Image: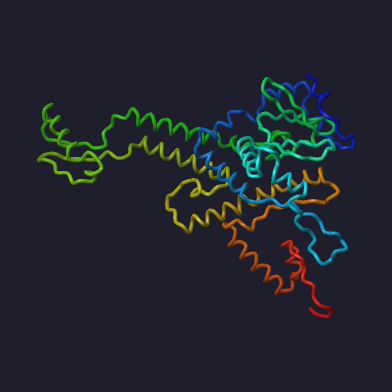
Amino acid sequence: MDLKRLLPKLNPLTRANRVAPAITDPWEQGLAAAFNPSWTPLTYAEYYARSALVYSAIKLRQDAIAAVPLRVYAPHPRHDRSRAAHQPVPDSHPAQKLLDYPNPFWTRGDLWRATETYLGLWGVAYWGIERDDLGRPIELWPLRSDRVRVVPHPDHYLEGFVYVGKGRQLVPYAPDDIVWIRYFNPLDEHAGLSPIAPLRLSADMGLDALRAGRASIANDSAPALVVETVDTPTDEEVREFYKRWETRFKGPKNARRPVLLGGGMKASGLGFSPKDMEYVQTLRWSLEDVSRVYGIPKPMLGDVERITYSNYRTARRVFWEDTILPHLAFYQEAVNRMLRSNFPADGLSAKFDLTGITALRDSENDRAKRRKTYVDAGIMTPNEIREEMNLPPINHPPGSV
Protein backbone atom coordinates (compact mmCIF):
# COMPACT_ATOMS: atom_id res chain seq x y z
CA MET A 1 0.00 0.00 0.00
CA ASP A 2 1.34 3.41 -0.97
CA LEU A 3 1.00 5.47 2.23
CA LYS A 4 2.25 8.60 0.49
CA ARG A 5 -0.86 8.61 -1.65
CA LEU A 6 -3.12 8.07 1.37
CA LEU A 7 -1.66 10.74 3.62
CA PRO A 8 -3.14 14.21 3.08
CA LYS A 9 -0.86 16.88 1.68
CA LEU A 10 0.79 19.28 4.07
CA ASN A 11 0.68 23.04 3.93
CA PRO A 12 3.64 23.86 1.63
CA LEU A 13 4.45 26.91 3.77
CA THR A 14 5.19 24.68 6.74
CA ARG A 15 8.94 24.13 6.79
CA ALA A 16 11.26 22.15 9.01
CA ASN A 17 14.79 23.16 9.95
CA ARG A 18 17.76 22.38 7.71
CA VAL A 19 18.76 19.25 9.63
CA ALA A 20 15.38 17.58 9.01
CA PRO A 21 16.61 15.52 6.03
CA ALA A 22 19.50 14.25 8.14
CA ILE A 23 17.24 12.89 10.90
CA THR A 24 14.54 11.51 8.59
CA ASP A 25 14.84 7.94 7.34
CA PRO A 26 14.04 7.23 3.71
CA TRP A 27 10.40 6.38 3.18
CA GLU A 28 11.08 2.71 2.55
CA GLN A 29 13.06 2.34 5.79
CA GLY A 30 10.41 4.23 7.71
CA LEU A 31 7.70 1.95 6.35
CA ALA A 32 9.70 -1.13 7.33
CA ALA A 33 10.24 0.28 10.82
CA ALA A 34 6.50 0.93 11.11
CA PHE A 35 5.95 -2.77 11.68
CA ASN A 36 8.89 -3.17 14.07
CA PRO A 37 8.64 -0.26 16.53
CA SER A 38 11.66 0.17 18.79
CA TRP A 39 10.26 2.68 21.29
CA THR A 40 6.72 1.34 21.81
CA PRO A 41 7.04 -2.45 22.13
CA LEU A 42 4.01 -4.40 23.30
CA THR A 43 6.11 -5.85 26.13
CA TYR A 44 6.02 -2.47 27.92
CA ALA A 45 2.26 -2.81 28.33
CA GLU A 46 2.71 -6.18 30.03
CA TYR A 47 4.20 -4.44 33.09
CA TYR A 48 0.80 -2.88 33.74
CA ALA A 49 -0.70 -6.37 34.04
CA ARG A 50 2.25 -8.10 35.75
CA SER A 51 3.82 -5.58 38.13
CA ALA A 52 1.73 -4.48 41.10
CA LEU A 53 4.04 -1.49 41.61
CA VAL A 54 3.82 -0.24 38.02
CA TYR A 55 0.05 -0.76 38.01
CA SER A 56 -0.33 1.15 41.30
CA ALA A 57 1.87 4.04 40.14
CA ILE A 58 0.03 4.52 36.84
CA LYS A 59 -3.36 4.05 38.53
CA LEU A 60 -2.58 6.79 41.07
CA ARG A 61 -1.54 9.18 38.32
CA GLN A 62 -4.49 8.46 36.03
CA ASP A 63 -7.01 8.85 38.85
CA ALA A 64 -5.43 12.16 39.87
CA ILE A 65 -5.52 13.53 36.31
CA ALA A 66 -9.09 12.33 35.71
CA ALA A 67 -10.27 14.04 38.92
CA VAL A 68 -9.43 17.55 37.68
CA PRO A 69 -12.03 19.22 35.41
CA LEU A 70 -10.71 20.94 32.31
CA ARG A 71 -12.43 24.24 31.51
CA VAL A 72 -12.32 26.15 28.24
CA TYR A 73 -12.02 29.96 28.39
CA ALA A 74 -12.81 32.60 25.79
CA PRO A 75 -11.67 36.24 25.77
CA HIS A 76 -14.20 38.96 26.53
CA PRO A 77 -14.89 41.65 23.94
CA ARG A 78 -12.32 44.41 24.34
CA HIS A 79 -14.95 47.11 24.83
CA ASP A 80 -16.37 45.30 27.87
CA ARG A 81 -14.20 46.65 30.71
CA SER A 82 -16.52 45.53 33.47
CA ARG A 83 -15.56 41.89 33.22
CA ALA A 84 -12.44 39.76 33.53
CA ALA A 85 -10.12 39.23 30.58
CA HIS A 86 -11.33 35.66 30.09
CA GLN A 87 -14.44 33.77 31.10
CA PRO A 88 -15.45 30.11 30.96
CA VAL A 89 -17.42 29.18 27.87
CA PRO A 90 -20.84 27.59 28.44
CA ASP A 91 -21.04 23.81 28.66
CA SER A 92 -22.81 23.81 25.30
CA HIS A 93 -19.80 25.34 23.52
CA PRO A 94 -18.42 22.87 20.90
CA ALA A 95 -14.91 22.92 22.41
CA GLN A 96 -16.15 22.28 25.96
CA LYS A 97 -18.50 19.54 24.75
CA LEU A 98 -15.62 17.94 22.84
CA LEU A 99 -13.51 17.70 26.00
CA ASP A 100 -16.39 16.74 28.31
CA TYR A 101 -17.90 14.13 25.96
CA PRO A 102 -15.05 13.08 23.65
CA ASN A 103 -17.13 10.46 21.83
CA PRO A 104 -20.38 8.53 22.32
CA PHE A 105 -18.68 5.72 24.23
CA TRP A 106 -15.96 7.42 26.31
CA THR A 107 -16.36 9.83 29.22
CA ARG A 108 -13.98 12.67 29.99
CA GLY A 109 -12.44 10.53 32.74
CA ASP A 110 -12.04 7.58 30.37
CA LEU A 111 -10.14 9.76 27.92
CA TRP A 112 -7.68 11.02 30.53
CA ARG A 113 -7.17 7.63 32.17
CA ALA A 114 -6.36 6.08 28.81
CA THR A 115 -4.06 8.98 27.92
CA GLU A 116 -2.15 8.79 31.19
CA THR A 117 -1.88 5.00 30.93
CA TYR A 118 -0.47 5.16 27.40
CA LEU A 119 2.01 7.83 28.45
CA GLY A 120 3.01 5.85 31.53
CA LEU A 121 3.66 2.73 29.47
CA TRP A 122 5.01 4.04 26.17
CA GLY A 123 5.89 7.70 26.78
CA VAL A 124 3.56 8.86 24.01
CA ALA A 125 -0.21 9.23 23.58
CA TYR A 126 -2.37 10.05 20.57
CA TRP A 127 -5.90 11.37 20.21
CA GLY A 128 -7.50 10.80 16.85
CA ILE A 129 -9.80 13.69 15.83
CA GLU A 130 -12.97 12.84 13.89
CA ARG A 131 -14.68 15.66 11.98
CA ASP A 132 -18.09 16.40 10.53
CA ASP A 133 -18.77 17.19 6.88
CA LEU A 134 -17.65 20.79 7.42
CA GLY A 135 -14.33 19.75 8.94
CA ARG A 136 -15.26 20.68 12.50
CA PRO A 137 -13.97 18.38 15.27
CA ILE A 138 -16.78 16.40 16.84
CA GLU A 139 -15.06 13.41 18.47
CA LEU A 140 -11.77 12.51 20.19
CA TRP A 141 -10.54 8.91 20.29
CA PRO A 142 -7.49 7.72 22.27
CA LEU A 143 -5.35 5.52 20.04
CA ARG A 144 -3.17 2.70 21.32
CA SER A 145 0.35 4.07 21.25
CA ASP A 146 2.05 0.85 20.17
CA ARG A 147 -0.09 0.80 17.01
CA VAL A 148 0.52 4.38 15.88
CA ARG A 149 3.51 5.19 13.68
CA VAL A 150 4.92 8.65 13.03
CA VAL A 151 5.75 9.28 9.36
CA PRO A 152 8.56 11.88 9.12
CA HIS A 153 9.06 14.23 6.18
CA PRO A 154 12.48 15.55 5.06
CA ASP A 155 11.20 19.06 4.37
CA HIS A 156 8.13 19.52 6.55
CA TYR A 157 9.30 17.42 9.53
CA LEU A 158 6.04 15.48 9.70
CA GLU A 159 4.18 13.72 6.89
CA GLY A 160 1.45 12.37 9.11
CA PHE A 161 0.55 9.35 11.24
CA VAL A 162 -0.48 5.80 10.45
CA TYR A 163 -2.48 3.48 12.69
CA VAL A 164 -1.47 -0.14 12.13
CA GLY A 165 -4.51 -2.29 12.81
CA LYS A 166 -5.06 -6.03 12.91
CA GLY A 167 -3.87 -7.77 9.79
CA ARG A 168 -1.59 -4.76 9.24
CA GLN A 169 -4.44 -2.63 8.00
CA LEU A 170 -3.16 0.92 7.66
CA VAL A 171 -5.28 3.92 8.67
CA PRO A 172 -3.67 7.27 7.74
CA TYR A 173 -4.05 10.52 9.70
CA ALA A 174 -3.10 14.04 8.69
CA PRO A 175 -0.95 15.92 11.23
CA ASP A 176 -3.91 18.15 12.19
CA ASP A 177 -6.07 15.10 12.87
CA ILE A 178 -3.87 13.84 15.70
CA VAL A 179 -3.22 15.34 19.13
CA TRP A 180 0.37 14.24 19.69
CA ILE A 181 1.45 14.09 23.36
CA ARG A 182 4.91 12.75 24.15
CA TYR A 183 7.83 12.80 26.55
CA PHE A 184 10.99 14.11 24.95
CA ASN A 185 13.32 11.37 23.69
CA PRO A 186 16.92 12.53 23.14
CA LEU A 187 17.62 9.47 21.00
CA ASP A 188 14.71 9.91 18.58
CA GLU A 189 12.82 13.19 18.41
CA HIS A 190 9.94 11.60 16.50
CA ALA A 191 9.35 9.15 19.37
CA GLY A 192 8.44 9.44 23.02
CA LEU A 193 10.52 7.91 25.81
CA SER A 194 8.68 5.43 27.96
CA PRO A 195 9.15 5.53 31.75
CA ILE A 196 9.40 1.73 31.49
CA ALA A 197 12.63 2.04 29.47
CA PRO A 198 14.83 3.13 32.41
CA LEU A 199 12.69 1.19 34.89
CA ARG A 200 12.38 -2.23 33.30
CA LEU A 201 15.54 -3.75 34.83
CA SER A 202 14.48 -2.82 38.35
CA ALA A 203 10.88 -3.89 37.71
CA ASP A 204 12.12 -7.22 36.31
CA MET A 205 14.26 -7.74 39.42
CA GLY A 206 11.21 -7.18 41.60
CA LEU A 207 9.19 -9.67 39.56
CA ASP A 208 12.06 -12.19 39.70
CA ALA A 209 12.26 -11.78 43.48
CA LEU A 210 8.53 -12.45 43.77
CA ARG A 211 8.80 -15.56 41.58
CA ALA A 212 11.79 -16.82 43.54
CA GLY A 213 10.04 -16.13 46.83
CA ARG A 214 6.94 -17.96 45.67
CA ALA A 215 8.99 -20.95 44.54
CA SER A 216 10.90 -20.91 47.82
CA ILE A 217 7.68 -20.98 49.83
CA ALA A 218 6.18 -23.73 47.66
CA ASN A 219 9.29 -25.90 47.94
CA ASP A 220 10.46 -24.80 51.38
CA SER A 221 11.58 -27.63 53.63
CA ALA A 222 13.48 -25.55 56.16
CA PRO A 223 11.96 -25.62 59.68
CA ALA A 224 11.05 -22.40 61.50
CA LEU A 225 12.06 -23.91 64.88
CA VAL A 226 14.86 -26.26 65.90
CA VAL A 227 14.60 -28.37 69.09
CA GLU A 228 17.90 -29.74 70.32
CA THR A 229 18.21 -32.76 72.68
CA VAL A 230 21.13 -34.33 74.49
CA ASP A 231 20.31 -37.83 73.32
CA THR A 232 19.18 -38.90 69.86
CA PRO A 233 15.41 -39.64 70.09
CA THR A 234 13.91 -42.82 68.69
CA ASP A 235 11.36 -42.76 65.87
CA GLU A 236 8.59 -43.47 68.37
CA GLU A 237 9.72 -40.53 70.56
CA VAL A 238 9.77 -38.19 67.51
CA ARG A 239 6.21 -39.20 66.54
CA GLU A 240 5.02 -38.72 70.10
CA PHE A 241 6.71 -35.28 70.24
CA TYR A 242 4.98 -34.05 67.04
CA LYS A 243 1.64 -35.43 68.21
CA ARG A 244 1.82 -33.55 71.52
CA TRP A 245 3.21 -30.41 69.87
CA GLU A 246 0.40 -30.18 67.33
CA THR A 247 -2.24 -30.93 69.98
CA ARG A 248 -1.03 -28.10 72.20
CA PHE A 249 0.07 -25.43 69.70
CA LYS A 250 -1.74 -25.96 66.38
CA GLY A 251 -4.56 -23.56 65.47
CA PRO A 252 -5.38 -19.90 66.20
CA LYS A 253 -6.64 -20.62 69.73
CA ASN A 254 -3.22 -21.95 70.74
CA ALA A 255 -1.19 -19.18 69.13
CA ARG A 256 1.58 -17.82 71.37
CA ARG A 257 0.84 -20.47 74.02
CA PRO A 258 3.83 -20.96 76.36
CA VAL A 259 5.92 -24.05 75.70
CA LEU A 260 7.56 -26.28 78.29
CA LEU A 261 10.43 -28.47 77.16
CA GLY A 262 11.87 -31.47 78.91
CA GLY A 263 15.29 -31.69 80.48
CA GLY A 264 18.17 -31.48 78.07
CA MET A 265 15.96 -29.90 75.33
CA LYS A 266 16.60 -26.47 73.80
CA ALA A 267 14.47 -24.61 71.19
CA SER A 268 15.72 -21.88 68.84
CA GLY A 269 14.10 -20.08 65.90
CA LEU A 270 15.87 -19.80 62.57
CA GLY A 271 14.36 -16.40 61.53
CA PHE A 272 14.99 -14.94 58.07
CA SER A 273 17.78 -16.46 56.03
CA PRO A 274 20.22 -14.21 54.11
CA LYS A 275 18.46 -15.28 50.92
CA ASP A 276 15.08 -14.23 52.34
CA MET A 277 16.51 -10.83 53.29
CA GLU A 278 17.90 -10.47 49.76
CA TYR A 279 14.39 -10.98 48.33
CA VAL A 280 12.98 -8.33 50.66
CA GLN A 281 15.74 -5.85 49.76
CA THR A 282 15.19 -6.45 46.03
CA LEU A 283 11.48 -5.71 46.37
CA ARG A 284 12.25 -2.48 48.26
CA TRP A 285 14.73 -1.49 45.56
CA SER A 286 12.07 -2.02 42.91
CA LEU A 287 9.56 0.07 44.91
CA GLU A 288 12.03 2.93 45.28
CA ASP A 289 12.79 2.99 41.53
CA VAL A 290 9.09 3.00 40.62
CA SER A 291 8.60 5.82 43.11
CA ARG A 292 11.39 7.87 41.53
CA VAL A 293 10.45 7.29 37.89
CA TYR A 294 6.72 7.99 38.28
CA GLY A 295 7.15 10.75 40.86
CA ILE A 296 5.03 9.14 43.57
CA PRO A 297 6.09 9.25 47.25
CA LYS A 298 6.67 5.77 48.66
CA PRO A 299 3.89 5.93 51.29
CA MET A 300 1.36 6.28 48.47
CA LEU A 301 2.67 3.05 46.92
CA GLY A 302 2.04 1.06 50.08
CA ASP A 303 5.35 1.57 51.87
CA VAL A 304 4.06 1.77 55.45
CA GLU A 305 7.46 1.83 57.14
CA ARG A 306 7.46 4.68 59.69
CA ILE A 307 4.26 6.11 58.20
CA THR A 308 2.04 8.53 60.10
CA TYR A 309 -1.06 10.49 59.17
CA SER A 310 1.00 13.66 59.01
CA ASN A 311 3.72 12.41 56.66
CA TYR A 312 1.16 10.62 54.48
CA ARG A 313 -0.73 13.91 54.12
CA THR A 314 2.56 15.61 53.26
CA ALA A 315 3.29 12.88 50.70
CA ARG A 316 -0.05 13.52 48.98
CA ARG A 317 0.63 17.24 48.79
CA VAL A 318 4.15 16.64 47.43
CA PHE A 319 2.65 14.25 44.86
CA TRP A 320 0.23 16.91 43.65
CA GLU A 321 2.64 19.84 43.73
CA ASP A 322 5.75 18.17 42.30
CA THR A 323 4.21 15.58 39.96
CA ILE A 324 0.60 16.27 39.01
CA LEU A 325 0.66 20.07 38.66
CA PRO A 326 3.61 20.09 36.19
CA HIS A 327 1.96 17.22 34.35
CA LEU A 328 -1.31 19.13 34.06
CA ALA A 329 0.62 22.05 32.56
CA PHE A 330 2.16 19.57 30.11
CA TYR A 331 -1.32 18.41 29.08
CA GLN A 332 -2.64 21.98 28.86
CA GLU A 333 -0.05 22.83 26.20
CA ALA A 334 -1.23 19.93 24.03
CA VAL A 335 -4.92 20.77 24.50
CA ASN A 336 -4.37 24.48 23.82
CA ARG A 337 -2.50 23.71 20.64
CA MET A 338 -5.45 21.55 19.54
CA LEU A 339 -7.89 24.36 20.36
CA ARG A 340 -5.85 26.97 18.47
CA SER A 341 -5.71 24.84 15.32
CA ASN A 342 -9.38 23.81 15.40
CA PHE A 343 -11.02 26.98 16.80
CA PRO A 344 -8.63 29.69 15.56
CA ALA A 345 -11.20 32.49 15.43
CA ASP A 346 -12.42 32.03 19.00
CA GLY A 347 -9.14 32.62 20.86
CA LEU A 348 -9.87 29.72 23.18
CA SER A 349 -7.63 28.39 25.92
CA ALA A 350 -8.03 25.54 28.39
CA LYS A 351 -7.12 25.36 32.05
CA PHE A 352 -7.53 22.66 34.66
CA ASP A 353 -9.74 23.67 37.60
CA LEU A 354 -7.90 22.80 40.84
CA THR A 355 -10.41 24.27 43.28
CA GLY A 356 -11.83 20.86 44.24
CA ILE A 357 -8.50 19.16 45.00
CA THR A 358 -8.34 18.71 48.77
CA ALA A 359 -4.60 17.93 48.80
CA LEU A 360 -3.91 21.45 47.49
CA ARG A 361 -6.12 23.44 49.82
CA ASP A 362 -3.26 24.27 52.16
CA SER A 363 -1.22 25.55 49.24
CA GLU A 364 -4.25 27.59 48.13
CA ASN A 365 -4.22 29.23 51.58
CA ASP A 366 -0.55 30.02 51.11
CA ARG A 367 -1.40 31.51 47.73
CA ALA A 368 -4.06 33.70 49.34
CA LYS A 369 -1.55 34.96 51.91
CA ARG A 370 0.93 35.76 49.14
CA ARG A 371 -1.70 37.72 47.22
CA LYS A 372 -2.64 39.70 50.31
CA THR A 373 1.02 40.49 50.92
CA TYR A 374 1.39 41.75 47.35
CA VAL A 375 -1.69 43.98 47.64
CA ASP A 376 -0.60 45.36 51.03
CA ALA A 377 2.87 46.13 49.63
CA GLY A 378 1.45 47.81 46.53
CA ILE A 379 3.02 45.24 44.19
CA MET A 380 -0.38 44.24 42.75
CA THR A 381 -3.81 45.80 42.79
CA PRO A 382 -6.95 43.94 43.91
CA ASN A 383 -8.20 43.94 40.32
CA GLU A 384 -4.95 42.38 39.12
CA ILE A 385 -5.41 39.64 41.70
CA ARG A 386 -9.01 39.16 40.58
CA GLU A 387 -7.93 38.96 36.96
CA GLU A 388 -5.39 36.28 37.93
CA MET A 389 -8.27 34.35 39.50
CA ASN A 390 -10.53 34.86 36.45
CA LEU A 391 -12.91 37.07 38.47
CA PRO A 392 -14.51 40.33 37.31
CA PRO A 393 -12.85 43.55 38.52
CA ILE A 394 -14.30 45.75 41.25
CA ASN A 395 -15.64 49.01 39.81
CA HIS A 396 -14.81 51.90 42.19
CA PRO A 397 -16.85 55.11 42.17
CA PRO A 398 -15.15 58.09 40.50
CA GLY A 399 -12.59 59.72 42.79
CA SER A 400 -12.32 56.74 45.13
CA VAL A 401 -9.13 54.66 45.60
